[in-house]
Amino acid sequence: MTDVTLAELCIFACSEAFRNNGEVVATGVGPVPRLAASLAKLTHSPELMMTDGECYLVEQPVPIGPRKYEDRKAAGYLPFSRFFDAAVWTGRRHAMVTPTQIDRFGQINLSQLGGTHQQPKTQMLGVRGFPGNTIYHPNSFFFPSHTTRVFVAGEVDMVSGVGYNPAKRVPGGNYSAVSLRTIVTNLCVMDFGGPDNAVRVVSLHPGVTFAQVQEATGFELIDAVAGETALPGADELAIIASLDPHGIRASVIKDNPPARSAAA
Amino acid sequence: MLDKRMTPAEIVGQLSDGMTIGIGGWGPRRKPMALVREILRSDLKDLTIVAYGGADVGMLCAAGKVKKLVFAFVSLDAIPLEPWFRKAREAGQLEVLELDEGMVQWGLKAAAFQLPFLPTRVGLGTDLAALGGLKTVQSPYADGETLIAMPALKLDAALLHVNRSDWRGNVHVFGPDVYYDEWFARAAAKTYVSCEELVDKIEDHYADQAQYNIVERAFISGVTHIPCGAHPSSMPPAYGWDMKAFKAYTDAAKDPGDWNAVKDRFVGANEADYLAGFGGKEAVAALPLPIF
Image 1 (spheres, rainbow over the protein chains, first blue to last red):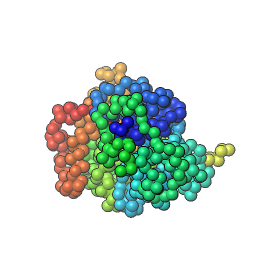
Image 2 (cartoon, helix red, strand yellow):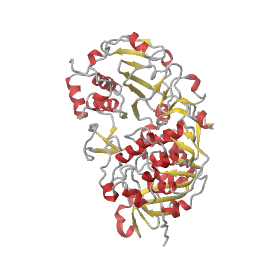
Image 3 (cartoon, rainbow over the protein chains, first blue to last red):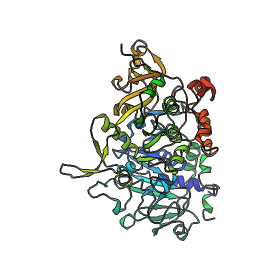
Image 4 (cartoon, rainbow over the protein chains, first blue to last red):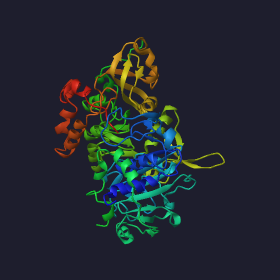
């Protein structure tokens, strides 16, 4: 399996986050999370629901990249106009996204960097749906470049999504649905399984050391490494290839390295 | 018969400085861009804009029309970061109320139902409440839950672009997703729609398509006929977004980076001039629908 790429390993690892989720909408934003959700549906979790990226629910995941407008077989309907009523605020969804920053509490930022709210140094998208997603349904994360700029020391610049920070929790609020699940990066797989939901490293990609991951992270990690991150098999690779016929996954991680030389 | 036909200039003439205006559509999708351009040709200023923002927000910010922006994101989808909105934010020129996407529609619903607020969990545990001055309420029932009181987003006016309308404001919208346009309309004191097709009495022509009527005509105050009025945003099934135009618009934010130097191209003296700059109606009609 020397020709498995790191991106493909990440897709396979991300797809595990969607196992045993039940009949929920699996939303992967960006090529790797989207391919991961589709792979999960086509392998271990056919009960997952997902959209074509626009507004139709499909039972056959649509490939990413250019395709014909009609190349989707709608089985259901989930437009933005129903999204909060049906998927987000009912908790029937699991999203995997790539925020710009994340901190030790799992607080995420997609809005702005530096400066003030009145005058940010760098304006990004805005909080989008992160506040609602994080208080209502499970969320996981994928980061193609694991650095201290992403995994920040202290707290994120603008808390766009709910984490496990007790100081941010308004007393009396209902946080029972906050559920941060898996973090997959170009170096490792992590979860929030430590004491008080502290971030743990649970597997390292081939050739990566825990020290390397810690070095690239702005806060202290727990070493709960149980082994090497599993590589996808031939069947999974074939499905990934069919879902990404234009090879967009090759552009996600810098230089598209093979899975086996992740340490290089 | 009720006749709500107006010219675009008459619609903008109904708006005044300092108003709160909601803009329908989503990002680069089915935005009432021709009406936005008509605002950009006017002297209107100090507006509060409520939108799921795209180039509508970017252009109004670039032109200095926006005093305050109520938003959850501003994006052109394939170009994730709206360049002129970023410039305005990074220059510190806007007051903002930043909200979650779901909170925006919730605030519009509160306004539509004439309520001061609607309760929600959304926003708790984030910086939104502190930054936006959002208050909490406590459930009066046994659960005693603390919730954010999402204030009503009352609009003085809303602008929508629809596929079809009749003179009375019976609208049809055909896109696979109609976003939150109906709530913008019900949250607004007056709603003005531009349309691709205008007919006298819709029931005489399209009685079998009434399910495309996304909002009742009681909420529509004015109707104007502007084919290609969503360009450069998408207008399914009639035409897709014009990513080439968005790319040029994005590049212009860097070079020359001065809205006054490029506004002739992206706003034009009138709609005919504007469209001619992008190949005319034939070119717009040929734009493929976006793939997500």
